[in-house]
Image (cartoon, rainbow, N blue to C red):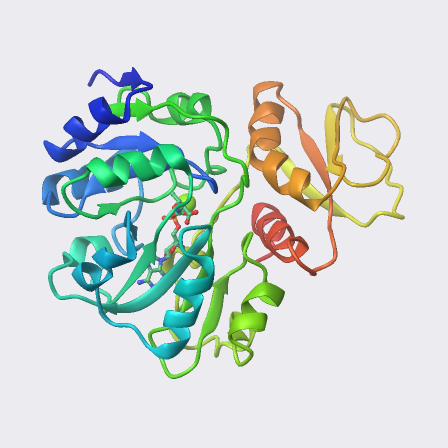
Length: 315
Ligand code: TXA
Ligand code: MG
């Protein structure tokens, strides 16, 4: 299949509205979209990514007015989170409207809903005739794509169109909060931090105490994620390791001696923004080991830590 590259949201929307699959920029990572009214397009999204069918997709909306089309119940906690953080890098898991196809939610009775803030994403969603289901626009298991070039590298020939935009300003996938039960639960850390969520919904809990015998609440979290080909070695700021040849380093403090490629980040925001593109860059240079400084789990550090632990196979 020919993959069209375009800067025009109008052109991308015409394709989306005719049942094609279109990658588009968001402030978190690029998404691979299909209109939820197009079952064959939804199937193509799973196929193009090599994504297991039991891993549900997030539904993207332009405006909160579309929420009733997607969700059947919005409890008071969800209402508060929507008021504070929509549009933005937050996904809410809500009881689903029966009209949302089971293929989108992988048979779950809940649906993940997000309203992105990125202006190009908003323009595309405004022109779309229905809400847009979209996972991250990368091959399953690889780091999410934070630039159109990374999308093209993974999915050229497998998708209909890439709507080109700027590199993602956050670079990490959205925070996911489950508001479908009696108590809000943080399922995936992201740029909306636990501290920010607690300021709005003080009773929110984290997913870490989940009974291991229960099926995972967020099916995707059981799959390996974000992993480059290189081995990921987590290190603390004070640790000085014996460095393997052909290694790289990303972190906030000085690197160990002898690494070939260094990405020294000024702050957590830069660390989050650069992480996945650094992984991809290291793979293109055949780096064997990437040393990654593990930040403390405060603020954005929680999300970066989560992605690093998953990339290292420790979660
Ligand atoms: O920032 C993001 O969230 C990006 C952009 C494109 O919006 N999307 C993204 O999608 O990261 P994806 O498919 O790579 O990750 C979505 C995660 C998966 O772990 C999936 O299992 C979970 O959200 N999820 C989706 N629907 C869910 C539901 N109803 N209940 C629990 N988890 C759900
Ligand atoms: Mg993903």
